[in-house]
Image (cartoon, rainbow, N blue to C red; front, side):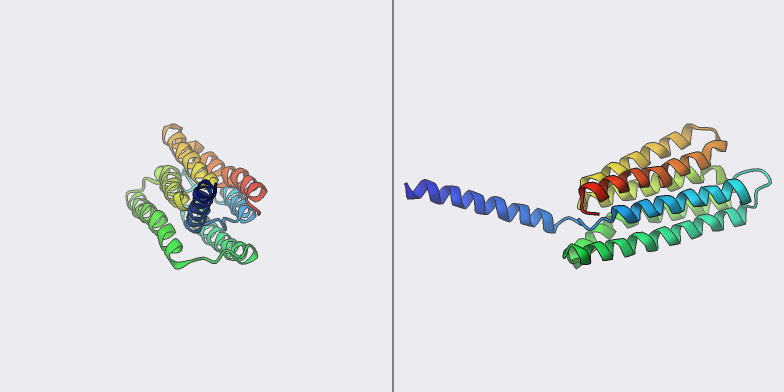
Length: 201
C-alpha cells in the first residue's frame, strides 16, 4: 500500500512545484485600478482635443498643442501604472524579480520602439491621420506580447486594442479620436475593473 501512496505524493509534489514555477514566471502585480486611472487620463486627453485643441490631424487644429496633450497623457499614464505595479507588488508580497522584469520588457519594448519610429515618420510626412492606427496597433502588440508573462486579461486587452487599431484603419479619419477613446480609454476602464475584481486590485 505504501508504494501507491508514494507515487501519489510525488505527483502532488510535482504539481505543486509546477504551479509555483508558473506563478514565479508571471507578473501578477497588474494594477487594475491604476489601469482604470490610465483610461480616465486618456479620456481626458480626448476631451482636451475635442474641446480645446482639435485632433492633431484636423484641419485648422493646433497640431502642436494636440500632440503635446497626448505626450502628457502618455507620461501620466505610464507613471500611474508603474506606481501601481510597484504598490501592488508590495501589497501582495510578490517581489518584482529581475528575470521577470527583463522578460516583460523584451515583450513590450520592440513594438513600442516601432510605434515611435512610425510616429516620427507620420509627423515628418504630415500623415497625422495615421496616428490612431499606429498608436493603437503598436501599443496593442506590446500589451499582447507583455501579457504572455502576465495574467490572461492583459493578453485579451492587447487583442482588443489590435481590433481597435483595425477599426481605426478602415474608419474615416474624422473618427480617430473616437477610436483613441475606445482603445486607450474604455478598454482600460473595462479590463482594469475586471483585473481589480478578479486579481486582487
